[in-house]
Length: 131
Image (cartoon, rainbow, N blue to C red; front, side):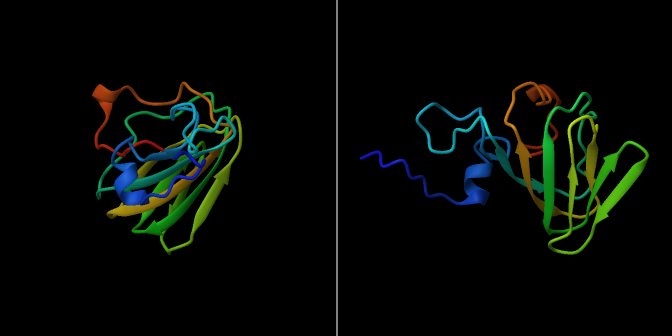
C-alpha cells in the first residue's frame, strides 16, 4: 500500500542518485519528489572537487558538515568547514564550488528545486560528487 511515506537510509539511498535524496528529479508520486526543496547526502573522498563552478545560481543553499574537512569556494571568499555542525548558507546570485580536504560527509539543502545545475555524468568524479 502506498501511504505517502518513504523510509530509507541516507548512505544507501544517496548512492542510487548521485547523493540526492529529495527534489524535483524524483518520480511523480514518490514522497521524495519536491519542487520546493532539494536534499543531498554527499560523501566525498579526500581531494574530491567539483568539476566546475556553479554559475548563475538561482537557489538558496545550506551546506552542513557531518564529518571531515570541507571547503566551499565563493566569489572572493573561501569557507572551511572543519567541525561537525559547521555550516554555510548562500543565496541566489552567489556562484560556488567546493573541495574535500579530508574524506567528508555533508548535508546540503537547497531551495527551490530547479533543473539545470548538474554537471553531466561523464564529468562526474564520484557517484555522489555534486553539491
